[in-house]
Image 1 (tube, rainbow, N blue to C red):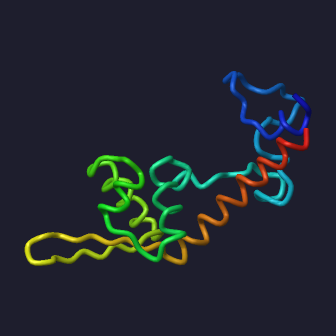
Image 2: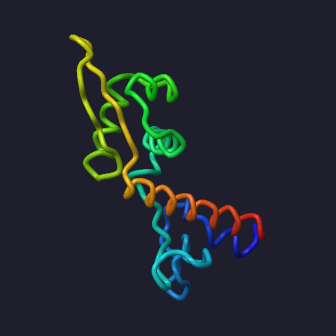
Length: 134
């Protein structure tokens, strides 16, 4: 593995780096992270179901709970918990209504959620570029 690729990967052995060596990690991806600091992926979006939710909503104006559940092939409880986390972070708007006695929940991606997804995708694209350059 080349230097760029190894620098773009997290330590997997769990050991501590040599004192004379800078810590390995996501520090060398050009244009991202805080000057010399680690590249931090948005952990809220990085989780598989939440990434699926924000990705689906990025290409759809809105989706119902049922539509999201079918797209992501997940359970009601799992989708509900992940959507709630995104809503609490301000990434999603949730509108609940009733059609007669039947509840209807609809989600939209907020501007903050859209910006966060874009930043996350920019980070991932940088990692891919750094890895391919080796």
